[in-house]
Length: 355
Ligand code: TXA
Ligand code: MG
Image (cartoon, rainbow, N blue to C red; front, side, top):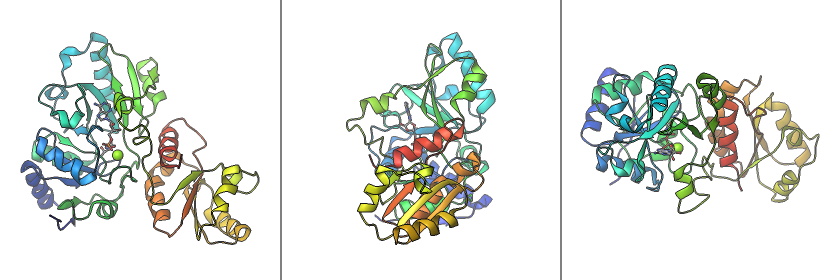
């Protein structure tokens, strides 16, 4: 049955109301410092099934479980399986990055439903630092499974209204926490029982930072989820706007260097072109390109002075804005650095792009 979805101001009363709904096995959207999540009781397989259903997410793609700051990780994680080195590293990672945008994949206890982990024997755990997410976790007293609150494969939401546009009619409540502070999802780091580390998804905390902190190398192997995916490419093609997106270098966009993709795209004669610049002022490029191509162009810049944190914060909302501008093709300039959060920006754009 179609639901009447409402955006709620984060008053104490509304937070209590949503916490009660979660305790009753319902799902609701909550803000976090990275992106908005679609939350449900992680220990209730029926609530978890509602999340998969609302997102139309295939059940082979496991969910992240969120914990309150007070909940010990060993309520869900089988700490006994970890070697001494792994336990030491876990303590250092927790101390430095929780609460915050780091998700750790660790051996799970049997009480975590298989649906949450897609049958894997590990569970992804994150302690968000957003005060509304923390309030919901504490007041419901539940671990909350929460994937990004978008339909599967689409752009992650960084505002309450984005969640409304993605999932209207599929949930009752969206708690409004304003725009998300970071704008891209958490880094997902696998801590194996022997203590070795593997970065499964770049995000708010960089590989280099983790390597420096732990004085060890972090691998970049495909996750079991991606390896076992029944349809390779399904997980790879993510964060997609409604119209095709192509990556183009800055010089190609600024007209100083010919680019094969550019010519190919133009041969399709789009009615309107959307351009996502990494830095600089968009107005100039917008009028230049429009004049050269003889078609309407709408350009946005992720950060006029090239600040990677600002660029990450704007990434998904700018993609959405261009998607909604009537553009038929989007061209995006990749982040010039792949260090720090630039790695996460480049990863998301590469996955959004047409292969
Ligand atoms: O910032 C975030 O992490 C947001 C907010 C809402 O917390 N959540 C989020 O969830 O991005 P989601 O479901 O969109 O992404 C979860 C990622 C997926 O790539 C999934 O494959 C991976 O985590 N994952 C979850 N459990 C895993 C496991 N046991 N082993 C390997 N990867 C896992
Ligand atoms: Mg997601």
